[in-house]
Amino acid sequence: MSVDNDQPLLKVSGVSKFYGRRPGCLDVSFSVYPGEVLAIVGESGSGKTTLLNCISTRLAPTTGTVEYRMRDGRRGDLYRMSEAERRVLMRTDWGFVHQNPADGLRMTVSAGANVGERLMAIGERHYGNIRETAAGWLERVEIPDDRIDDQPRAFSGGMRQRLQIARNLVTSPRLVFMDEPTGGLDVSVQARLLDLVRGLVNDLGLAAIVVTHDLAVARLLSHRMMVMKEGRVIEQGLTDRVLDDPREPYTQLLVSSILQV
Ligand SMILES: Nc1ncnc2c1ncn2[C@@H]1O[C@H](COP(=O)(O)OP(=O)(O)OP(=O)(O)O)[C@@H](O)[C@H]1O
Image (cartoon, rainbow, N blue to C red; front, side):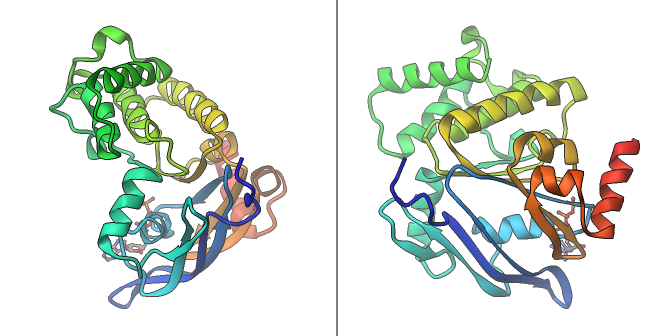
């Protein structure tokens, strides 16, 4: 563990994003610490995706700042660093797990190459090592070793998502963004994937930001959660506290309506 784990990894201050005059998210501030999993929950249209995009350099906020603490301890404002610096960050320090695995995988190269490619991007050159590490990761995400040369388009939805996770984690990122990681999957497949993700996040001591409309996902994966409504964060706190003892009437409604389903 690094000595300054009491410093936030990501510090979001006063972030708003407007699409023309329509607000996507409004005045959002929070921090994420090393090893912490934060869930962002809310109904459709509440601003979760907009916020996720703003804090992961995919969409410049209209106002506000997003600071990231690099491995060397320096803090950088994501929207003031150069494009090249941002790209290095994405390759080395971050992962992004998309809801649709096709958005995060190369569907026409083999499973092994999907994982190996990320290692090559951080400078690994030895073919034998790359293949061995890729095989190890496929095993870790429960993809049989005789599928290493298959393309992900021949995989089931659950396998694709597990492959996307391996591709993201192989470089030992410090922060992983996940956008509805179990979104398109059957309930039984979701449960298994959530277990797997929870185990990996714990073992690797990863920090993660998980966007989900599913409170069960937030409950299983996150330490802390933020509830969004109409672009604003209306409640945040430890996940168990927010779900067991919601303070805001809107959160109470969200929790009770989910529980009744
Ligand atoms: N590209 C865009 N152009 C204009 N308005 C947008 C755009 N993207 C999002 N919005 C608006 O911003 C608000 C927040 O949308 P956002 O997609 O961030 O919500 P969400 O909580 O992620 O919803 P969902 O769960 O359905 O993806 C909505 O009012 C939406 O209509």
